[in-house]
Amino acid sequence: MSQAEVSRMKPPLVPLATLIGRELRGGKVEKPLVKYGQAALAKKGEDYFLTKPDCERIAGDPSTSFSVFAIFDGHNGISAAIFAKENLLANVLSAIPQGVSRDDWLQALPRALVAGETSGTTVTFVVIDGWTITVASVGDSRCILDTQGGVVSLLTVDHRLEENVEERERVTASGGEVGRLNVFGGNEVGPLRCWPGGLCLSRSIGDTDVGEFIVPIPHVKQVKISNAGGRLIIASDGIWDALSSDVAAESCRGLPAELAAKLVVKEALRSRGLKDDTTCLVVDIIPSDIPVIPPTPKKKQSFLSTFLSGKKSQSVNKATSKLSAVGAVEELFEEGSAMLAERLGKDFPSNQSPGTFKCAVCQVDQPPADNLTANSGSFFSPTSKSGEGPFLCTICRKKKDAMEGKKPSRSLVAS
Image (cartoon, rainbow, N blue to C red; front, side, top):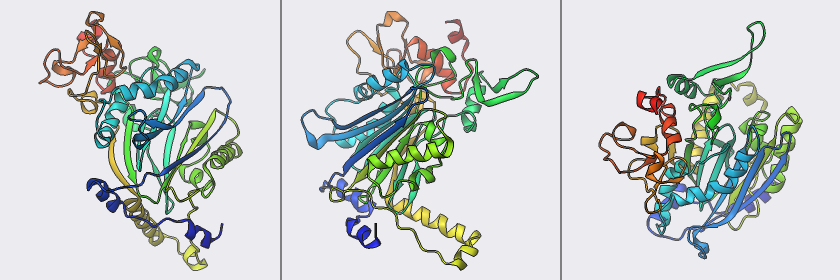
């Protein structure tokens, strides 16, 4: 594609501050087109994905549309991944009050994604509403954002114990052990794992059989992009074990989403071979008058500038990256803490049926007689009164201390 063709395809750019200002003043902001493609190669058959580009906050009202895309990377079987694929979206939506405005809906979404994470698997879950992107993730799948100008942003956090020092500290502080497999002769092999259980991830949905240290509280990030658009690449670890974020983005720029997803999978296969399930979703968020995200033009570099690519060029690149990110992406929300008090708060809507309580984590309705515990005292806030929410069921109550990096209290151990 020539430089002239790229220039003709570009829409009139509106600064992000102007875009946000229009929304605040109630002005019209045209929604983008959302185009997507997917590709996968199976090794164990435990990867699943979800694509729902035509959801509506208010049924029958197209102006309230939003899109959902997700990757589920199961382990120790497929039932958890299938269950999460079929139920997660409904659980998230049930945690948001009905009939709220779009602004309130977007504001409630990050907290609802914490409450909606139910039984299952590792997941990267993406909600797109207009130019706003919200991503919740547990595990080691990843979502990156490639914006105009070639700036690649990571919207998820890796919960592999090998990579995440904070999660290792949380697990050990709550009484778990982190180490590698021991083989005959005392040699250690493989990645760092959490014991008991031996899982190499510190967070996933479910995994009740591997101990309370593996928790389902996701990292959540919400950003707003400019009307120049952007591309999301959502993929399981089969992609990211083979390709860096930058390489994955560069390998498919300028291509339609469907072809781009296939090319990312092909590039991962070429780089590493088929060592694991390899699943990729590419989602383009683009102005309605552009058929495809145009490629980022490569800057020509003279021999002299290439030769002098030391500290000076590094500082220039860093400054350019910062400016491009400020102009193209506005961070609205980010939280990765495992502290439930910080993530939910006692005012979180419970939406329970009469005579029942709903667990703030697993979202399962249970009658009080089933040992559901009201979160008074030290559970959430010292000012909480008995009977106030949020509530935790028996299983999630036992996980709470491990979520927060604390050793279980005596009362919980006794129960």
